[in-house]
Length: 427
Image (cartoon, rainbow, N blue to C red):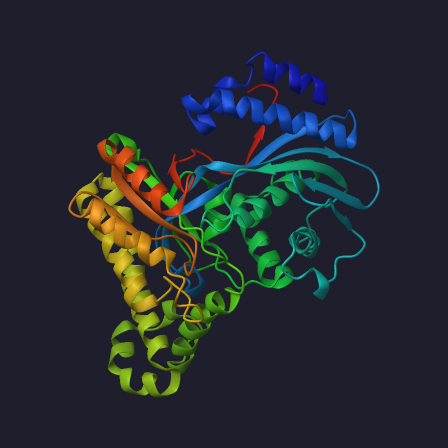
């Protein structure tokens, strides 16, 4: 469809039902204006063309903090914040991707080798995804795209994974008849992040973004993870799912993130395995003295967190399916305590004066004790906390948190019903 026809269709409200499904009834007008702005920005940048509109959501981790890279279990959900793309297929070998507020990304499909100068830059993700498509025998090709994102950076909502899933979905839709499975797109995104971008990570973020909805995922076989959808509306249970952005800097935190899988892996290897999921828990506890000597106390504590959190994620999925919110909230608190005490990812040991997450957790305890639940959210060390807040306390909770961490630091999330999505003319 021509860009101008999309503009007329959006202005006439043709896509309002779809936007309501994706974002909620109260966000239709905002999203309609956002989509219109994106199409108009595309036309200004690239001219009038046939276009497609696609989006990929951020995600929130419900349970399974740092278990995925050890082939463990997680519970996650896609959220109503996403990366949106207006895209058009082109001739030649060059991809041009303009992200709102950033210099344009240019990449030639004839140059797919790893470039050290691109490490930790978005262009490396674009190159890595195209390289992996080619390695796996999928088709790639040139396109131009304009993207805009409202996924909060550094929030634990995985803006990078949403971008990776979006690019994979673009290539799937434009050059592979939209036939590449969601989990395969997620794995391609993880490959690009690990190998080309240079950040070690598990598969949780990309899978939750690509598959969408409330999901329980078991990565015991990461090549074919088990994904189970969970039907649950948290607000109907009387709670709001919220995050608080503490505003901490993520600069120079890569060594902190990388140390977690490294240390967990060292414990696994000391016991003859590559990942902790393949280690017998009783054998682990029978060898604590040896493991302390070989791996260090922090590695042992992080392994304890894995075993407990992996079991807890399975329990959480069952409780959510049963709609047992009181017991589920107890597991959320237990997960947060384990991350603080054993995993130790609430603040960076290199910068102990910056403890925004610790402070936010303390405030959550004061406001929500006996009423809700709270935990560190995502990778940790800086960023956000997650809280389950009784609906009648949301206003007070927001007010207190924004007094401490600033206006706009509080966000109430809605669960998006799907993962990566193409807005079709018949929607």
